[in-house]
Image 1 (cartoon, rainbow, N blue to C red):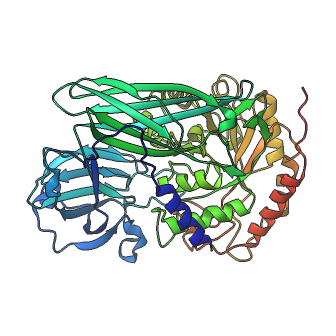
Image 2: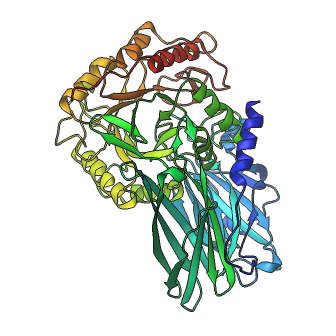
Image 3: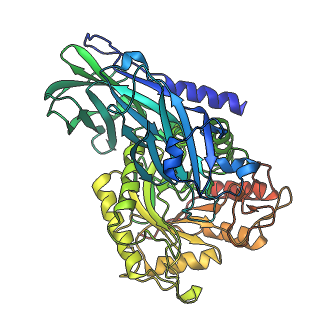
Length: 584
């Protein structure tokens, strides 16, 4: 039943409304060809790249894309460079079009060659990147693409699954296209209206400047078109603003996740040059004092963290897995979490939009020795920008986090604070969030707030709410944080006291259950999130001999533990208990 429901949801999300009041010629404005499937594969840290590019690939192994090489026994412990090769043909009717190759994610550092020519490199294993191959692609002859994926770089305690873990596709467009449309729809409850802003990024690859019209449509709502002028070989940003009655729309909420569809046509003369469609939801998620408000009502929400990990699928996140996991998590009474220390897969975000699960997304900067934690880091800014631009329209995404558990590597645990570099990193990244997106909340996940962190060394002023992790006496540590940094909501983004143990007998300790119950009495605490939903593969210190860290309330194969039922009981009690009143 769960699988059927999820597939139905996916089908509904794929339906596109193409109605318009304007008559246009529907040409072949945009096309794509999937490169998913069987690729040739070689795992080697010794082979020379020149040998790779000049050699024959028939003797290589084969592998499925999307996929991770370390889900296969033969490569289960391999760390380093994996080389992928695929031969493909470009459709004959793509002559004259601009052609790109897009990778939705490759872990972690990658290089791409087409027909022996280096297209470029990408650092970061969770977000899309693409290359213009118009000049390199051959039409009428076979093309050879080679990808190097290197999973040496590792952050966190989860497994660094290597390879091309998301979709690969060829994309063809006219000279002019819509790069993205970002829609903001903020209710004004005092005026009874909704303020809409649609921001378009349009690219012109042609050799002449163009005048075009963008014709947007939100289902049956009539909207004015937007006239744009764009120089040759340039990109342009254009914005459309309008206001509508609040009573004409349904809001997005975790109990009632209403979605709308924005379809925008890009028209040059009387020809349709491009069209793009995005789902969105109308909601207002904000902080007032020490509480979260969703659509003008105070809310407290709990969750669990979910590691993108499965022994059969690695971190590829197939639809059926994320569907069964997220429906299971919702059934626990969970509505809010920073699920993972890295950007999430697009199909997971679409599902969260549809079922009503609120998310804080985070870039993978973690720990006491993260080499990226220094001020104004161009790489982490790239990661943040890629994440925000990709995920802007998802109503489930209500916040951005710039890192997790940074701390000085020196000294005892109780003396931990941020280094000057780490403090500068967090503050500079929070400033950059403001440049990219002012519509969502900002946070950083701390474990120093209740240790030696103080105002001036803890990024308190610039966060909208405090996210803290606790693996000790959580009520005491939360109170310490609140006393030192008052006036802002606190969300316990990770809570635990130790690994739970294997299924089915693994249990939460009585001590932890007591903490979870006690925390609901703190009015400035907006919720808690248990680490974690699932057991996950790891070679981090303290991992059992099985190779899977047993923090989950389900094991790596999703078999439930006793802890699952304990947590459900606790969360049910949270929902039945009135929210404690704040002192005004």
